[in-house]
Length: 371
DNA sequence: CATTCCCGCCATCTG
DNA sequence: CAGATGGCGGGAATG
Image (cartoon, rainbow, N blue to C red; front, side):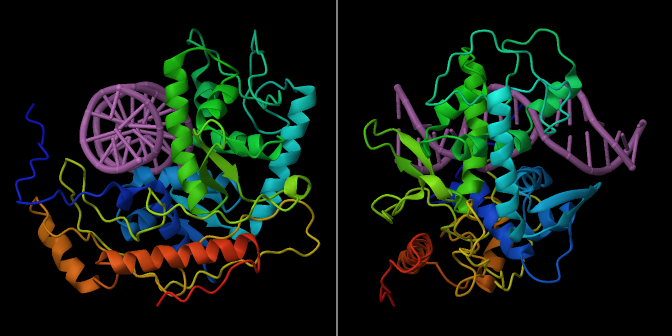
């Protein structure tokens, strides 16, 4: 049926920009919006509205954030904001959990010990990755019978996030390709389509974790293949963490490179008026608590944009298409603040890099005099 | 062509 | 039972 063809009727380039809709960006914005004093509860509708995205996307964000302790479901439509300060503890817990499950592979039906799912002993589970840390996981392969209940939960983004993180926390290497991660988490399931789906989810997760600087995308030194590296260093493996700040992720899909997620649907028209949120930046960056706090370090922080730049950047396209465009255009001129041109954007990116390097090696950076 | 990952349908799960 | 959740995979951007 007549698909709402994306007909780029409007002369010129398509204004749609994938980056502006990334989960990573959305996550940053979400945090910018709520990570501040006084916030106690987060309403899904409110969030969706202010961030100008569909509810569905909020679920994605919230689910991974919940896995890291930043939020807790309070009631329907409502979450209790805990804060970034809860992250270290949550990670510590995940780590423990991971190790525990690892060597005794608890069997607990319907998760008792670590809420996790319930499994079925993967038959030929051969350690595919460095370790055999078989964090729970285990999903029956090509489905057969199953108790939809647990089965569904078993595949939740939240759980997957936890397991993904455990992979880093309980493993020697802190570098992981999503493909390997997917396979590991699937208990080496052969089913390629299953893996594909898993990888898709991992991309989602990786994006938000990246935006929070938990991990960073890199290319495996040898394989050249894309992988992710854990940045929230763990005591042991720490040791000078590599060469330090190899931040050259210039212009790829650098998450958080842009602000806001305005609605510019890919094909279907964007409905509801874009309600750009009015974040004032103020996202109290949690300082790197390097003091005492044992091993796990809260990932280097988010908000690359917090202070200096914080305003929403509406779709910068020159020409858009559909009707709704009007709205955006208007909004664009209203909020238009920065980054309308490459130069500014670059500057911003630069700023972010500076922040990252500063953070990762507290002191290593040199005040690049961009300006 | 391969990799990334947004989008939104629709199965499930609450309240 | 309506509304809330969120798995899932098609297929469009991007590399």
